[in-house]
Image (cartoon, rainbow, N blue to C red):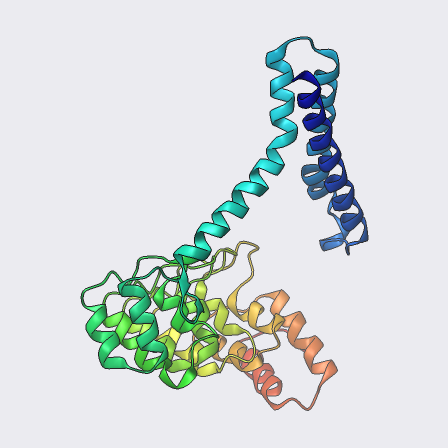
Length: 307
C-alpha cells in the first residue's frame, strides 16, 4: 500500500513538473507584454505553483505523519483531479446539449426550439414559443438567445426580426455574455440593431468588462458613424472616460475614426491635449484628409492651439 501511494505521488510530481516546465518554455518564448512587463504573470503562474510543488515534495519525503503526507499527495494530485473533473463535465455537457444537428447551446426544451425556429426564419413559431419561455435563461457557457442572435453565427437576413421578437418577449438588453454587452455586440451590425436595443432599455453608459462605457464600442472602425449618433441621441454621457482616463474622442482618434471624432466634438464633447496631438499627427501623415481638415477647422474655431 505504501509503495503504491509513493508511486502515485511521484507520478503526480513528474506530471506537475513537466507541465510547469512546458509553461515556462511557452512564457519565455512569448512576446513581452505592455512595456515588456510580464514578471508578475510569470511569478503568479509559474513560481508560486513551483514553490508549492517543492514544498509538497519536501513534506512527503521528510514527514512521518500520515496526515501531512496525505496533504502532500492531494496537493500534487489536485491539478490532475481538476483536469479529470473538467473532462467529466465536458462529457456530461456533450450529452445534455447534444442535438440531432450536432451540439446546441441550449438543453432540450423551449429555448432550443426557439433557437431552431429563429435560425430557420420561422418568426411566428419563435414568437409563440417565446411567450411561454424564459428567454433570459443562460445555456451552455452562459449563452443567451439574444447573444446568439447578435453573434456572427446567426444568419443576417433574419437577425433584426429575431432581435425584435426576443426583446418584445422580455430579453434583457443589458445582460452580458462572455463579458460582452449586447450593445457592444450590436455596434458592428449597424444602426438598426443598436436602435432596437436602445428602444428596449439598453444603457449606452453601462460599463464593459474593459471599464469603458459601452458606447465607446461605436468609436471603432468599421462601425458606421450613424451608430454613434444614435447612441448619443439616447443619452450617451459625453463626459465619461474609460478606466485609463481616455475620452470618447480620443478613443475614436486612436481608432482613426475621424468622422466619429468630429461628431463627438460637434455634440459637445470637450477636446484635450492628447486629442490635439493625435489630430496634428494625422494632418502631418495625410494632409489631404478632408475629414481631418474639417475637424481642424472646427477645433480652431473653438480656440484649440493647432497651428
